[in-house]
Image (cartoon, rainbow over all chains, first blue to last red):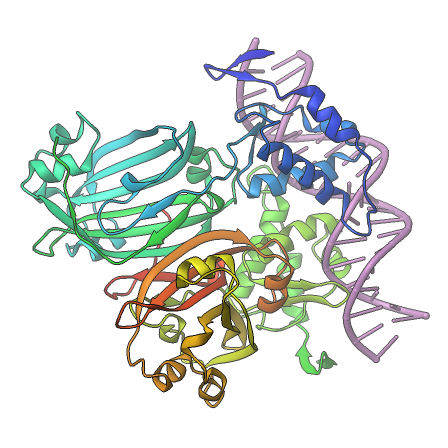
Length: 272
Length: 272
DNA sequence: CAGTGGTCTAGACCACATG
DNA sequence: ATGTGGTCTAGACCACTGG
């Protein structure tokens, strides 16, 4: 069963499978709350592939009826799954299955998400915006330029196996990169931009990691529910002369990433 | 107003102040849900100090009545504050104010939380357990010793300004540290143990950062509500000969820490 | 328009911690 | 024994999205 939605064909989840897990008898409520038992079953179904990634679940009213609980109890189970990034609810549309939160390793030292070790699946990069603008407050401090200085702003979204997983906002000092766009566009590669401006190597000068929660922008881009916990990562890269050339600030769904920092090594810009 | 509770004198929150923010008229519900408006007011009150850290709020029934909403709506506001680590609810006891989630910087390189830069307040270290045991799976890999090998296990809780903020579990190869306890106990210092065994310096070999949620143990130790999002940090330290001597695995409340890798400057990671 | 998720009400029972 | 937070029910209205 398939229907057109948002220009993408979306499959409904396997109804029989859902009925099966919905009709299983509950354990004693005193040991584990009903909503947690429902959560367990749905989480397992997500994990073992019974619920296909991208599939749409039945409506909350139907689900509540299937599981023989109130809609509120049903919602509590669904909301925990959303908080963990396994489901996404869209108002007026439905609840959708997200890819199970496999972990990705990010190696530090040179590039960042370039080194993301995913499964066999491809990594897509969506460039959401490439504009000229003025530097942000944090960017000014990181890049060591005055507030209001011109920067190239690059906003990107990384997609792995069809799931948006990393949203990032980068700033570059405009005077260092007069030909940013020309160098960037062909392969959507920041390393290409550096190379085109005579920067063969760059080093990670500083990385900051903090937790937070998804606002509107983050939730929409990452296809998450608002207030989902996130990992915020900001980083500054230097050229070989230790002048800052890039300030990057991004976020990941909390449960979808593992950051690995080893001994710092400086990297080479790939040239093809 | 003060009463004895848990062997500690606990103050009730300023009732007049709560009534004041409870009786303010609500904005249009279509713009911001009631529970979010309540959340806003309580979050502000936590932040500006109207609600003293450690104070106990009125019961949920009373609160709901004061704010002229159902208990469920009230609970939704409270639960968001718990998720952010600003409040903690204890079943059968009450809801308590936690210290506002000021951020702490952790500098990497050598020690970890030793370098925690808090406010003027002191840092306490509670040693929860110091025992002999067998190495964990991850510990075996990190320490490069066979599974089941004997290790010294150290479980500690860091408390800053009265709030538990970092729970950690460390493993050390037992054969390297025959006099662990004798060296550790006087000052509760791992550095002392290293020094007593001829290790003058150590280096951080690897750090891994991942997100997760509080289980029972973490919630109790950190005095958080279960399922609160956490930052998990695991690290391996080497001696000068690059032999692994310590595997550490700990967690922080998500919103209470900012990890900084690289040269130290001031500033916070913020959302893009 | 119909259906979706988001919010809210007014009750109720339970397990738990304290006095 | 009392009051606490945790859970659950059976309704209801709303804003949003899609066809």
